[in-house]
Length: 264
Image (cartoon, rainbow, N blue to C red; front, side, top):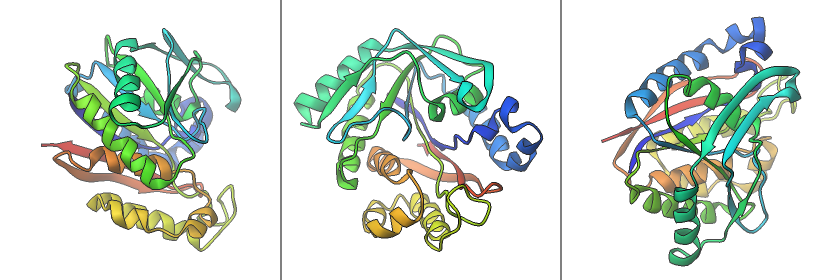
């Protein structure tokens, strides 16, 4: 059964070894992580399912990474010491792939790699230090359209809610990378508009409103959050949840949104 769901940021500057003195500028996001860490601990998940836009993806299929053990590191950012490890959940992944393919007719494939991307590593490092005896399922979006991601999210929820295990679902993504002159992608009108729209639509779980967003504006916003967010909206669409925005900030020109979806 599903016991926890949240939307989290994954900017590498959240890591002490990388952010260093600049980490103070992300105080609101770090405070939100502290609150979520405590709430996740109290939810006692046995399995954490996480989706990141940086995971290996396919044009025409969603995917899960299946491995006995997962390892995350931050070597790409110059940190050769930080290491994250988690066990894989073979049984639930098997239930997922059977249900998605055969019951819901959703294109779904499996990859097998020990390494997980930083979009998963960063939030898991911040959220799981106190957790014991839990397992991980890394998911990747596809390059199919937004409606396909909504349907994937709905099917994912149906299957996971049938599990006897206590399951947490996280979507890890940052918003626009084109908010202002500090942004890695430069400034654009569409960047701030995208972040404002996402905050409003996610607060009301407005699936139709998100589906109606203009593809050209999405491209101009410099973001890779849209499809994971559509998966999350599909996942939450028939759950009795109350969205709660914990924080939003963009001190380095990238939108960092933190949300918890309170289970009834």
